[in-house]
Length: 310
Image (tube, rainbow, N blue to C red; front, side, top):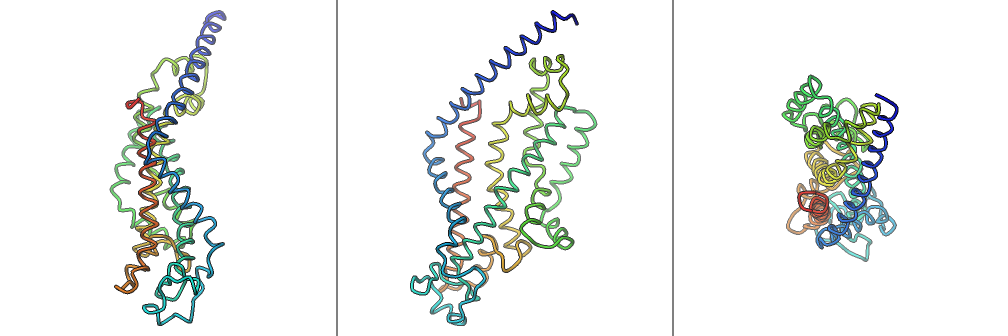
């Protein structure tokens, strides 16, 4: 290729990139306006912010620690263990005489940490593998899709049990095992989007300019499908919180005295009687609020970012 042809190609590429940046700015500005018009999504943002603030600063208002036992009410939980401002048990106590308010705060920290760390990281892992499979295709794509088919057929609860038998039960191990179990998150949709975009003109121009495959993937293809990744991440976070709560409910999650929403719901369902409804009601309420707000936020992001709805 002559020098003049290269200059023309470079100029055309620069013009296309500038046009793409202008379009991108208008896309995100329009998406922000569309999201703010979704009242339930905006309300859910404030609900989720309230949960995060409760998890971060709730211990400052707790009169007891989450593992401290109130010996004065132990054995009299049904009659004296209910919610009370006088003894500092704002949500009552559990069956072992521990302050439920402090335990819900600690459980909120655990569940939200798992959701907001393991969720995005698992989507990033799945999106990266999906992008590589969609871009290169061929045998690598067949291998990834075969592994995907096998992986989703394995009950993930078995993987939790085996993993914890070897590595123990802790918050770090919980986050790590969820990322590994959920590595397929976003894989299919990112793979499909990359397969649609990899033969577009701006990708061909980047190849002609000598850009590497990694640069094309991470500088051109993935930024063009960032809206897909954002939507899928917002929908994966509540699924991860649900998965953590489920395994904790089944007794293979966070280890005592640490707790999570799922563990608290499991304890409340196991020990609750008609006179101790608070043991289940408070952790279940926080879990439901988190799930509802996250799903409405995800729904709002989908409506705001999906080009089909523009």
